[in-house]
Every structure is written in C-alpha cells, then in structure tokens.
Image (cartoon, rainbow, N blue to C red; front, side, top):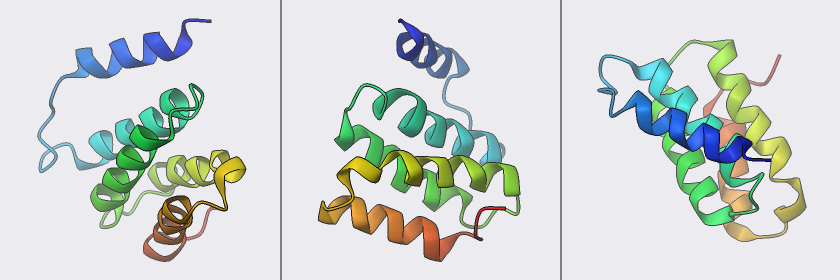
Length: 101
C-alpha cells in the first residue's frame, strides 16, 4: 500500500517544529504517526511512544480536533487492550483529555 511510508516521509519533511511554538501541530503529528503509521503496521511500541508524547503535548491544548486524533488512537489500540502498557496509554487519553465529541 505504501501509505504508511508516505506518512513517515511527510513527518520527516515537516521537520522538528518547536513544540513551544507549534504545540497543536506537533501533538497532532505524533497522534497521526501513532494511529496512521505504527498501528497500521502493527508496530505497537513506537505507537505507544508517540501516543504518550501526544498526550504530553496536547494535554494543555484546547482543541477538540487535536484531541479527536488521540481518541482515534484509543480506538485502534483495541486489539491490544489486555496489555498493561496499552491500558496505561488508554487511561491517560481518557483522563487527561476531554471526552471525544
């Protein structure tokens, strides 16, 4: 399919935006990488790293759209729901962000 590869190229080209200045964009990019790249490729560990980083970044941002990306990650984590590290990530999204609308 090549779509996950294209997403990684997109993320690389976007470069290292300073999170202090582009908070929402950086957080969304991390959530997209988690759900739209790593979980599609069934690569759980980097998905969780990006998901946790996105929660760290977007926790203080008021943006239903940005938070929706992380709630999408939660939905895609369903097949691994019994794993403790997945439960921890899901718990963080559900408790540190507003509910999905």
